[in-house]
Length: 571
Image (cartoon, rainbow, N blue to C red; front, side, top):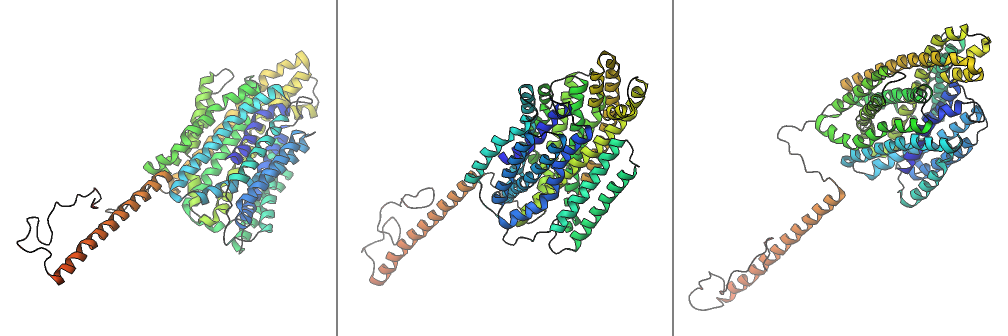
C-alpha cells in the first residue's frame, strides 16, 4: 500500500501547487496553463503508455522486482523535479516519474490478486482503494503545509523519504510472484500507443491554447494521433503477443467496467484541475486552506470504499456502479451553484458527495476488470485497469482544461481589448488563464485592479460550462454501466450456497474442528473393534462365565455401561 500512496499522493499534492508553479519566479516557474497541463499529462501519458509493458515484465521476471525498480525510478524523478529550473525541465522530470509509476501500480494489484483468494479480493481491493483515498486526503494538506513554509519543489522532494521507507518494507515483506507462462514483449505496440496518445493530447491542448480547434496544427496532430491509435488497435488484433489483448473487450461487462473507470477519472481530474484555481484565485484561499477544502473527497472514499463490496453483494455491481456514477454526475452539475461568495458548506457537501460516488464506482469496476482475466495474467489485467484510468484522466485534463481555456478567453477578450496599454501579444498571453490575467493586472499596479473582477467572473462562467460538460460525460458512464455491467447474481432454485469463511482465522478454526471430528470418529471405530475382538474369541472357546446371563445383557460380564463423551468416545 505504501507504493500506492506515494504514487497517488504525488498527483494530489501537485493539484494544490499548480497556482504556485504558475506564479512568476522566484515564487514559481511562471508556467502557462498549457505548460501546467503538460506537467500533469507528461506523467500520465508515459505512465499509461508503459503500463502494459510493465505488466508483462512483472509477469515474466517477477512482480516484486518490477515494483522495486519502479519505486527507485519514481524516487529519482521526484528528486530531479524538485530542483527543476524551468517548466520544460519540470515536464521532462515528470515524464521520468511516470516511467517509475508505470512499474508500481500494476505490480500492486497483481500482488493482491495472487496473495488473496477470489472471495477475498473485493475486500482487499476495497482496502486498496481506501489507500488511494488516504493519499488523496494527505496530499493536498501536506502540499499546503509545505508551500506555506518551503519552496514549490518541496512537494516533489517529500516523495523521496516515502519511497525509501516503502522500498525497504517491500524488500522484507512483499512475496515474489510471476506468471508461469508469460507473454512476449510488444515494443511496436508500446511505441504506437505512446505516440498516438501524445499526438492526440497535444492537439487537444494546442486547440485550447489557440482557442481554435480548426487550426491546421491542431487538426494534423489530433487527427494523426487518432490514426496512430487505430493502427495500434489493428496491430494488437493481429499480433500473437499483444501488449494489450483487445479480445478481452469482447466481454460487455469487461468493456463497461473499463469505460466506467476511464470516464470517472476523465471527470475527476478535469474538475480538480479547475477547482484549484476556483478556491485559490477566485476565493482567495491559501494552498493549505485549499488542501483542507478537498478533504471531504478523500474522507468519503476512505469510509465508503471498503464497504462498497457489501453493497455489491446485496444489490449487484450494476446498481451500485450506476448509482455511484449518477452521484458523480449530480455533483458535477452541482458545481453550477458555486459563485464568488457561495457558503463553504455547499462546496464541502459537493466534495463529499463526489467522493461517495467514486467510492461506490471504483472498487466494483476494478474487481470486474481483475476477475475477468486468469490469475496468472493479473499483471496485464492491472495494466489495463490503470492504463484506462490514466488515459481517462489525461484526456480529462486536456479536454476540460482546453474547454476551460477557450471559454475563458472568449469571455475575457472584450475586457482585455478595451484595456489601454496592452499589446496584442500581452492580451493573448493574459487571456489564456485567470492566473495570467491576474499576473498582468498586478504588473499594471492600481490601474490593473479593473481587470480583477472581470477575470473572476469570466473564470466562473468557464468553470460552470466545463463542470456541466463533465457532468454529461459522467452521465454517459452511468448509462454504459447500467446497460452492460452484470446485475446481481442470483443462486439457482434449490441450490445450496456453500458457507464461505470470512477470514483466515475462521477458516483455520473450521479446519481445526474438522480434524477434531475426524479424530473422534477414528477413536469410536477403534473402540468398536476392541469390543468385537473378545466376543469372537468367546464364541470359539465357550462362555466366559457359567450360569444364567447377567442382568446387564448378553455377552457382557456385568458392570455399568461405559460413560461416553460428547463426541461418542468411551471415557
